[in-house]
Length: 395
Image (cartoon, rainbow, N blue to C red; front, side):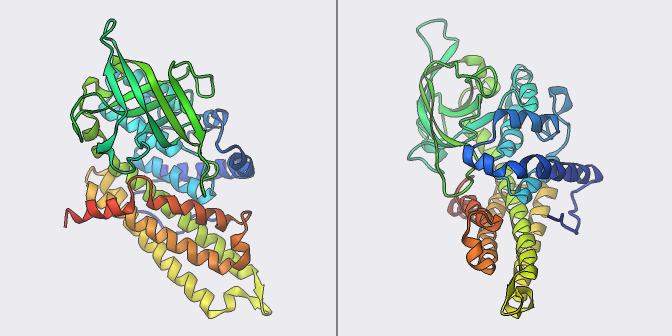
């Protein structure tokens, strides 16, 4: 698998060094075990800790908290290489570039020092529990409640509710739960509460009333740990309220969701580049009617169109990353990038799979996995229909 031969304007020499190191590590350590990860439905906590030891966790977290002290560009190159390696089970992007920023941006100093070093080492694996059965992309409809315990000292919340489609749900031992701490409906009254379930990722749960449901079976992302979570009178210390103030959750979510949506677009770029690379190689090797597929004009034209789409998408996402590194990426542009890139990703995968013919429909062919993994990109992080609504409001 070759790296792109054109530079991105935001990439420094340090970014490129990390990119090559990540590519080497994933090729050597993860790609040979891909079938094992798919069969298990997740990548074990031991794999996470080894990845942390090799610099793949919390690359943008400040060094004072145990991170590498980089920026979003460092997270982006890891995400790009994961997508190019076609190892979909790694939930490190969510852990490092979604959960960690919530703590860095809104957490108290005590919260940062309690959780971030363990996240950087892989001792803690994290999840963020937003979606509930029946709510989908509508975060204002969240029902999970966290009520201050008035029966004793009042230093705990009691959390009740259910979450679904939670990435890292089986592995996670630190879960940021979107819950309702007030009686107000809609956005008001929502808060983020960190729930510790075990002393170390992979250890038995010790939080009374907390239960992990099914590891959900999906049409794609077979190696990714996606689960149901249940909370029944789970006692959580008051000082686990992110930022220490109730009712700030919706604001915190809205401010951080642009980065989550940019992450989805970045993943889409890496996957499209891998698909083009695979299909071009196959077309030059596969014989049909006595000559390589590449010799047919239709094949060359289709792949030229795919290349144009990939280059355009990469340029769009590069521009978004440049803006984001300057603090200038707004919610509307991030939503548009997520929606457009993920839709192009679906079209690219379809065109590439078609050129593989029957082999493209076989699960052992990389393009087949890329194809099914791409479908969820238009759903999670907010459905594309919601993304277009958000984007249109700024027009």
